[in-house]
Length: 334
Image (cartoon, rainbow, N blue to C red; front, side, top):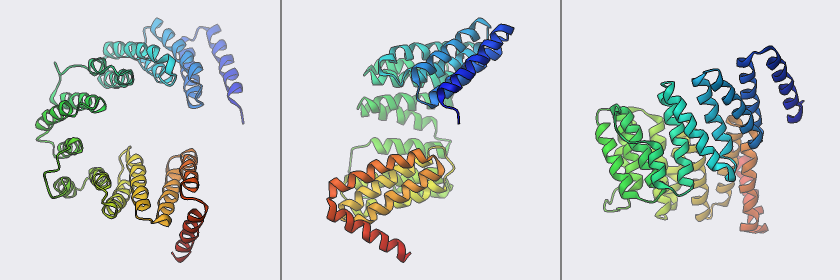
């Protein structure tokens, strides 16, 4: 199996060969492919350099759409290096300009969002809002997307009143789209700090999602319920709701289903710990580790070892071994 240095050498030889023949599109392609490989190996600086070389060549060849993608990719590599975040912003701005020239609206929004994240990391709220863009000359659907993204910025800046106002505006625009409306209302409820209702504020939303048969919305609402119960120290209720969210997430086909599943597992484990259900904590974490390892990658599962290893010093040897013994007994009983 080749190591990364050998792969780089092989690509450089191919790049040189196509440079000699003057096949610029192939040179651009190879720089871009090498940039991706280096990115996957977390070689951020080298990856960014390859993307930059490819982007510059694509621009000279008037390949606007291609150069836009490459500048965006360069930004994603640069943003991984704290001292290169300014350079990353520049790359994303270049991508926005080129995506605009290429009439690629989804590319523009993607690059705007990436730039906004960097602005937020720099605690520049106004800069982040500017990066997202205003609400002028947009279709209603585009306006909803932008309102939600601007609201997300205010959420990150702990300006919940402004975030709520924007989401309420988005909800009015989405009044004829039941599924989207529920998503926005979940966000509004999650922001709300008022506890004037005796009933669970998410119950009505869950009922509507069930009627629509939208499993991804159901999982999201159940997760919000579990988080709310956990914050209110209703440990048993939190476990029940988190377990429901886990199962719903696994039935979903949405791209974020494993994130929902992971968060539900963590809430369930933390609530079980409060209930002194140590064996249950181990069962949830080990099951989660196995599921994510199978469906995503073994590396994800390996990260769970850090969580599991933290239990021993927190619980002590006797408590940990007792929980492990009980967990094994329960497994054998199953």
